[in-house]
Length: 547
Image (cartoon, rainbow, N blue to C red; front, side):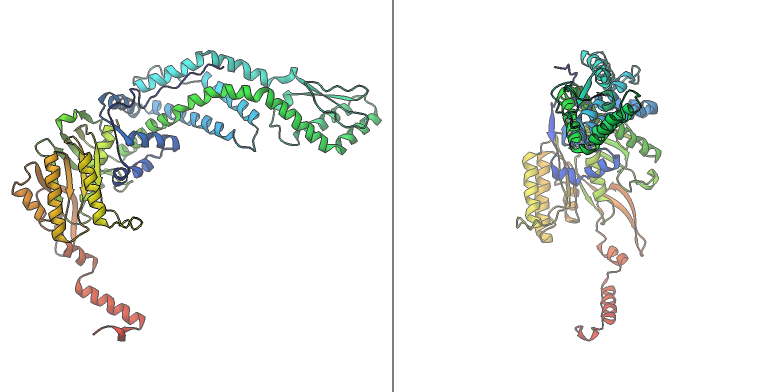
């Protein structure tokens, strides 16, 4: 058995302690897939990132471990390029291993080529001795341990031996009719017949594809033509036999090919296991290098990028200055994305947010959730400064369409989701609710919304609750919910259109600006009359309109 050096876990080095599962609904609500698309991860890095987001941690040691490498790579672009090159090479090895399974390729040749490249890679590893982060130190130590391992030394010896097959010769014999005899071992011997020796090193120079052996035998015969001792008649007979017996030659070629596969492929497959073990690093290295590239690109767009400080969940505190959602206009400069603050503590941790549609309520609460996930995953965050406590769960509800397959309407689905959140959330959880209870009458929705606010207030979870039900803000102002505060999105009505600032400020908006938005869109009652009349005239059915 070949000695295998197992790759270190450079994403979860301390196991899976203190984790909680982020459910699919919350992941979709907070647009995590859009974030992963923006980072441009390959499939292996994408899977690592999804796993990191799915299994969030209350583990400061893991967070700091990941932050170290992001900080180092952000500061050292040359080192970041080196890590990216590592990742790309490992991706190539992984891809080559998968291609070996292709029935149209030669496993023997592909594995031999793979091991040759692997030897070159290990013998020319960049020096990471100067790396400070534990991640890169462990990667550096791992590659050195491969180079020093007995398995690698054996591989370095094995590959040249297989490549240099000049000492292994197939002796192909022909009977009196010029027909190649079948092969039994390294040599094919038949008395009173012509013999042709084939140097196997010629088979390694290019893939032994079907028909190649036949072509090689013809080359051998042509070389014999130049031998003055080779009789012309015998030459003609041999050459004609080769041409006439192309089917037998192809069969013989397959026999030789199968012999090589039997002798060497299983051995090469065994030695390839180390390459496969090494490629376990491809996803983690892409995770680190691609996210660092993403942070660097945000900085180029003048976004603030900072290393967040994580606090114990018992502090129940968040203090973030000038955070921007990086997914708002993905290629915009920072000045085109409005920054906001996120502030909460144990005594003020429920926020009822009102304001017009498109004013920024939903973007703000998505930013709250996205920031928490990024920080708790050990990533940097798009803010000026950020201190926030760990949470033991993130639960969201955003408006979803009716599920006609289950026969459930929007309101019933909302209530099922609310019940599930109340059952799972704790005082140390983050709850984000976007306009719940809108699937029923205004009065019933308002009553149920107040009941939910009472419940989450009693539970103590940090809760963000957007709504157009303005009487709820009166309950906050009246002190019914001591830990609750009203927030609003600032906008200016100049009498012609609404000017959105996308800025969150204290207080209740007082109105949802539905009429103003309808005026801006052009859907006031007189607009509707004009639209119908114009359509009727164009369609020629004006006489059918009700008077």
